[in-house]
Every structure is written in C-alpha cells, then in structure tokens.
Image 1 (cartoon, rainbow, N blue to C red):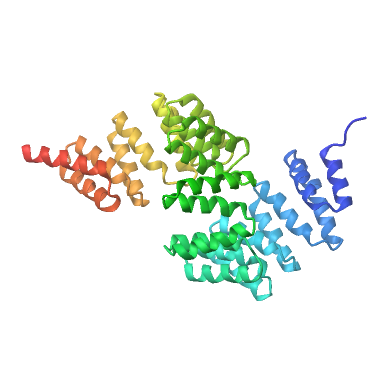
Image 2 (image 1 turned 180 degrees about the horizontal axis):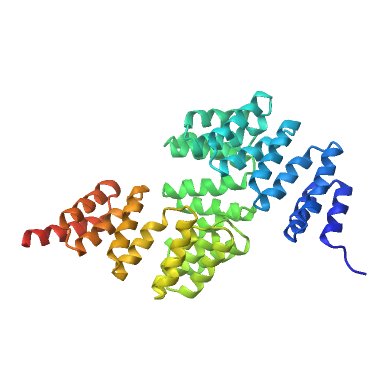
Length: 389
C-alpha cells in the first residue's frame, strides 16, 4: 500500500483542523504546481468560520514569494477580526520597507484593544523609525500587558542609548522569565564590558536552552581567544542548525584562513539560502583564486538586485584590471550611494593616473568621514610625492 502523498495528508490535516501542519503541507503541494488545490483547504476553513484560514493562506503565499497576495490575505484576516493577523501584516510591511503603513496597522490594532502587537510595534519604532522614546513606551506597555520578551528588547534599546544600569536591570528581569535570547544578548553585553567569563557562561546557557544563534557569538569569542578549532566547531553546528547568517559567517572564517574552496562552498550555500549580499564576499574569494571574471559576475548580480554595495567591489576589480574609466564610474556610483569607504580606493585610482589634487581630496575625505588609517598612510605618501615634484 502506497503511503499518502502530501495532498492527501493536507486534506487529512484539514479534517483535523491542524493549521500548522496544513501550512507546511500546502507549501509542499504548491511547490509542485498544485497552487489552487494547496490553498483550497484554507478557503474552506474560512467558510467554516475559522479565521486562522486567512492568516495561514497568507503564510503559504508568502513562502511562495507571492507577497502581494499574501498581504491581501493578511489584510482580509485583520478585517475579519483575527487578533494575530496584525502582527503578520505589520511584519510583512516592515520587510518591504513600508514603515508608515506598518505603523498604521499596529496603531489600529492597539486602538481596537489588541495589545499583542506592542512588542512588534516597539521593534518597528526602535529599529526602523528610530523613535527611541516611543519604542521604550511601547516595550514598557508590552511588559505591563504581560509580554515577558519585551524585557530583553527594552534592555537592548537602553544599552544602545548608553543607559547601562537600566539595561542590566532589564536583562536580569528577562533572565528570570527563562528567555533564552536574553542569555545570548546579556552575554554579549557582559563581554563588551570586559566580563568575558560571565559573558561566555551566558552564551553557553543560551545554546543549552536552544538559542542556536548564540553559537556565532561564542565562536567569535573563542576565535579571538585563539581557539580557532573550537570556534570552527561552533560555526559548523550553527550551519547544521540553520542559524541565520551561519553560512556567511563560516564562509568568511574559512576565507580568512585561506581555505578558499571550502569558503566558496559555504558562501554559495548562503546565496542559495537567499542571502544575495553573500555574493560580495564570494566575489572576494573568487578574486583570490584568480577567477576575476566569475567575481565580476557576482558583483553585477548584486547590482542587478538593487544593492548598491556592489559598486565598490566592482570598481576595485576593474581598477586592478586597468579599466580606468569603468572603475571610476563605479567609484562615483558608490559615493553617490553613500558608501564613504570608496573615498580611499578612489583616491588610489586617481593617484595612479596622476590626478593628485583630486586624490588628495578623497584621501582627506576618507580620514574625516571614516578615520581610515590606510587613507592616512596613502595621504602621507601622496604629499611626499607632491613635495618632491
């Protein structure tokens, strides 16, 4: 007897009303081209009065990359009175950079008495809108409403403002609630203040409690201590446990140690996982392997995705190739996009072609805007050259 396929399992889960299982199975069914059949059980759930069907439909559509349709599903869920839907809609709008619309969603939810959005509203205010006072108020209201996770978020906010005693108090309150992420964040807080042993203890406790993202921080701590082997073990475990940015992190570690083939594998894995920015790091690894054309393709892909950070890497590559005009165009584009790190490298190009006054301006801009030590050395050499002339 053949085991049931995903479509039959989806139908069985729908009969049980098991929404979480339905979501996973529906994504699997939709990825095989059966989108309408994958979504049908959620529509039936809504028709039967289960408002979770709207939200679940949105999650499936979002997983398939259909963000417009997902947003419509979340909006329908909010309109229908699903109290959890506002958090999903607000988060999607944040991911799309539509911060005022996300705030509107949260404010409306609060006006209707939905205090469950306070934590995410605080995150929007703190991380995206940079309204720290409003964020603090939102977190404190969330705590008053019983959201213990808000202690950790408030602690991070207070830490960033230099209110260290208050931050420590909030971290300690978060630890009492059993928040694993609080152990990780408090560990970093202590390490930054020279309490390395205590900090490490909290990182390890976070890992024991299942907060795998602490492995990257622990790996960095071990690496700085000279325990490269132990650090690598943490990075490898983070990759296996699918920690966000773990492949990028591990790839950079391997690159710094000259293990370029392994680094390339990890960075390509990061790209496969959806991290387009890892193409910049991959390009640097490819250049070190003498594969300039392949690196150029990666940088062009970054630019094609709308990420202006590719300009500087591509400019440096073209400069070394001797393509002065194209290199200069990319340096200028990098600076126009606000990448002040481009000043020093652009100065080197200008110095190479004899445009010394312009080179001096860019070296000085690099020093003023970024404190670049290399730019200071380059400026000293340039001034010496000009005085000898």
